[in-house]
Image (cartoon, rainbow over all chains, first blue to last red; front, side, top):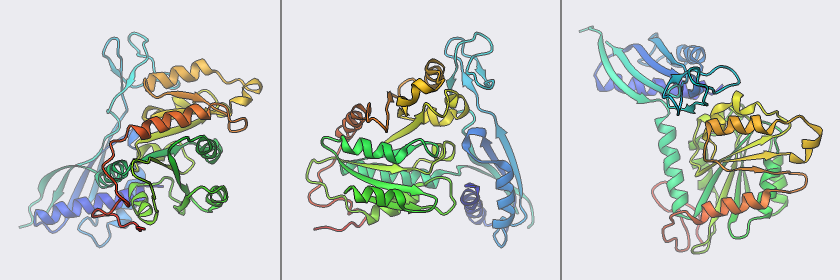
Length: 113
Length: 243
């Protein structure tokens, strides 16, 4: 649902960088999306194709790198993906704490020509 | 000249929203208004909670922005009680964002006396997912959970519980009729969030809300306010009406 305005923002940022580099068009966009960023890659792709029409991003290829959220164990320091209905560390059983891993949502790089 | 070049961008997609949110937070805070972003699933008693808290405020002046996909029933309800409530309809969007709040507070009149504190309650769209992902300029993210939703909610909606600054468990008057596992619920809450206070409340009986109101007023009193003479908000972005 909320991927529409977010995709507009992605296209705006990419078009700006393209213009600043005095390039004609954006060929590809590399996006890093954490699962807790709240954005679904497939939806961004769908909107991207529609919204980018008539912009320097038209027909650019969208490359999405997904990042799984990880917890950090306060006892043994292990970073781990949690099992459903649990926060327990697989190594020592202590409940892990949230980290920033999995909340990423940024444009890493673009290719222009 | 049709070489393909790589450009390093490294720009957060949410930067624009986050900058506007930061501006709203600083601007309102400097004028003595604490912003409370109220989040919870549909039917957890968000509007009922606001009424209960506002009734029990001792010092701070309340203001409300109601976020709804459609309709202004809650706003009319609050206005009929003499509460200054304003409506935002998102017409389909699943959360409020910072630009919507920035525009809305421009229309509102925060008529505070010198040193007086206000609390602006913003009732977000009924949803436990998207509102957790968009900051709207709040000082306090208040999460409403209920005993009727079940004790597994921290495990299913971890981000909402992780980000909350205060957590209310509503409908505790129904505990005798339910199998709410408070220990399991709290274990999940504390794995995600070590610091948020948790208050048990009942919209039906009013229990627990006096403590919540006092906690919020404590946060409002702790705001670092600048002198506000008669008006407020006449900086580059905001043009409120002045007496």
